[in-house]
Picture 1: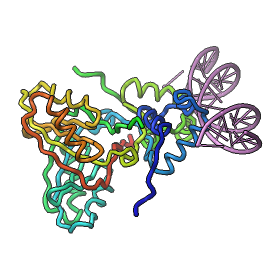
Picture 2: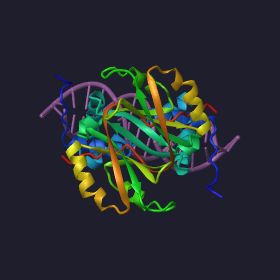
Picture 3: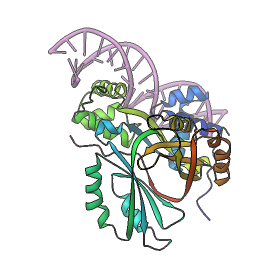
Picture 4: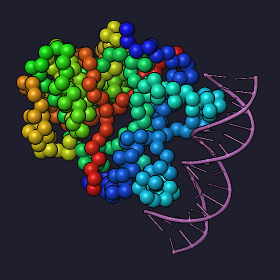
Length: 158
Length: 158
DNA sequence: GATGAAACAATTTAGTT
DNA sequence: AACTAAATTGTTTCATC
């Protein structure tokens, strides 16, 4: 069927919870929290990486500090048939595109984009999006203020 | 006016690029890449944290592995006047809510929510959203497939 | 701000249970 | 899978430039 099912025990979930909150926590500190040996933590973490339970360790950076002040969501209709998602794959290659979701309802993608300002969003749409085939229409929504933006998942207790 | 402007030099941007790609990189490795002393890297990193250029170090976890299979975007109209954003603040407190954006156009919020399945989304809406005042209407869009989902920013060269 | 050196701490490997 | 112990490597402080 699909890939082997991933089974996580209480210790794995504890590690995930700690690392989701602070990816630079030391294995020694994880070991102290969970009352186990650091070498055992290292083994667990390696396996979680291997199994792609942990996808990446990343620093969240303030977009304003690196001049990425504009955030927009763009809905796009595509003329390609169900099953193919080449349009989405092309969109995913663009560095300013942070997210591409295929959504229910119409033949639609929802795309999250970050640029310096509205002028650079226009340029991106004119120079890059316009070369992607099968895009029938776009509707752009500009974010005025972001109140919360995290990717923290609710990790179950058990 | 606003908070003091943040000025980042080439070294800071190099550190940010490396840590955005891998938050568990050692300061020693950053030092080797950027050809400087590890103690200087430590000082820079501390300052970037202090200045809130680095907001958090986090492990990105596979949602499927922790049983968070459903992703939805909800647009909400609110009856509260411009300037106040209590509705948004209440939404931000809910752990399943990953993002809350105030968007242009109508009196609207765009909310990103992750739950186990559609039944648990229904429960969340019935039990939690319904207690938040001033929500006039909601329109829920279910994600069928996520092609890309990252928060990686484009870090300028200089 | 950056460096180098010293003291301290964490990581990682290997052997054992 | 987990533990301990030992060897290696990284972190952190501090005096100096």
